[in-house]
Length: 298
Image (cartoon, rainbow, N blue to C red):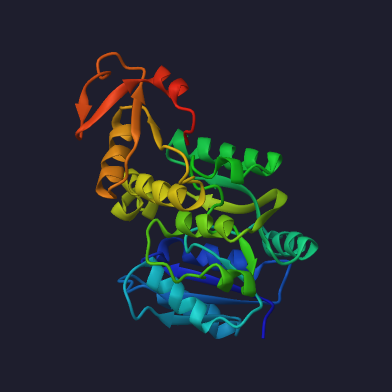
């Protein structure tokens, strides 16, 4: 039984997979198993992987019996055997000391922690991804992940490491909610996990035009607000206080619509004079100063 299980969901990644697997095989830490789950690829992904598996028994492949990333992750986890779990994407690269650095941080802190480090994009196609890189790395410097949980996903999906018992305690890959990476991070913090931060780059992130975060509707912006709202209501909602929604722009309206769908009452405020006093979704929009008149608000 290996010490670390690396789980890779894979769909049509043959163009990049050889480099990915080579970066895993070249890790300074060697006590691992790499489990690739092929999600109905129509290219030569599985053939590329099997070349590595033929030479190194630490590489194992399975076919996804379901469809999509979540089912692939569930399949990979079912076949994993290690006491420590991590995820990898089929188009990214591991710095040579990724596993050793994450493992050292995790073992030093012990159970109840998730290890993560800095990221670096390569072949980046847009400034937005570079901004995300800088923001994630700043969180490592400040160890401020929990404080920024609702801004964006604070731990990169292929850049974490957990003890198996902690992973199972928070539900492993059992959730069917997308975006699955962000949802898992919410469960990490809901489960009381603390960050064991590594002040080095532990993941090399490849950006390309067919990356799932660019092309899949499962990772579109409109999937993030409902996820954030649902977890806010679970983690931070104080039922003894009135719920205040600030802002009546595009995002404010999207949140208001979701709150209405959930049947939740809220006070809506804005500083936009064109919307003050109007009813949107049958809710009156007030001047934001109205907040000061509320004694008990959240």
